Length: 303
Ligand SMILES: NC(=O)c1ccc[n+]([C@@H]2O[C@H](COP(=O)([O-])OP(=O)(O)OC[C@H]3O[C@@H](n4cnc5c(N)ncnc54)[C@H](OP(=O)(O)O)[C@@H]3O)[C@@H](O)[C@H]2O)c1
Image 1 (tube, rainbow, N blue to C red):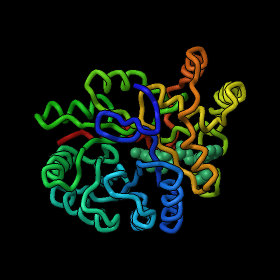
Image 2: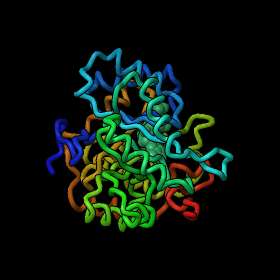
Image 3: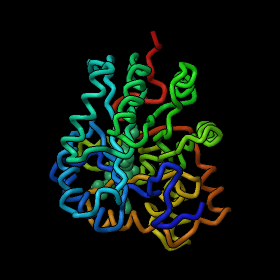
Image 4: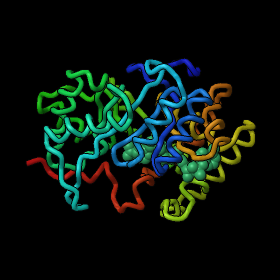
């Protein structure tokens, strides 16, 4: 697929999105305005980010027609290991309704289960099917699901998820899962594309110091290739995800970085450099490591 500012994937999602994790409500409002000003038309939100009011205000204040923006949000499913009660069918329906109020929207474009953390995940998926029928979301999908947890849904006779949002960068290249999603026409969305950078979540309390050591080799290679192509390492990493057929997300609270991260359409990573970046894979997820779990492996057995 050609990669331009206007190109969209199979569910109509613009390929470059703005993520809102680790922003306060006030930061989310300002950053979403900046992102929409810079040209992003895809916003990624979640119940768990606790800032949907700010995200909603930002989208409203930017004055861009609703149908031009693709909005994703996610259900936090609950997680017994953290003492967070699992949501049942009705609670899942009510959660999106509450989120829509905070976002000041009458529907989202994509609703995801944030991770397969609940025993009740098939019941939650049934509720997502109903939310789609109700018109409260145009598309439904999952996040942090592996082949096993996707197959559980299909084997239960439920509809196949339309998309799966997963951690995807050269250190965590998810090769088998990417192939499986492609074969099954499940739209791939990459999160934490910038996790290999030394600047990733490097403010106190953001958790970026966990696993920082394992990134050293990757940083040497990304710097060398980025310098050669005369782009920043952030742009290189985002472009790598795009050239693998993913939609990519990035988050920043800084206007200049928000603009920089959208500037990924006017260069291409040559095949040889793509291969060097592919060679850095360690099958190592990083994004949730400060929480002490790998969400893709944390699914409790179904009852
Ligand atoms: N489904 C899931 O489980 C899941 C998990 C994680 C993330 N996500 C989604 O994916 C989005 C992106 O992932 P992410 O938040 O992990 O982070 P990311 O976009 O990969 O990286 C953000 C971090 O990198 C820094 N940064 C951003 N642009 C930069 C640049 N151009 N140069 C240098 N440093 C830069 C940011 O700092 P500043 O803010 O200080 O600029 C921040 O610390 C999230 O916001 C969220 O919407 C989903």
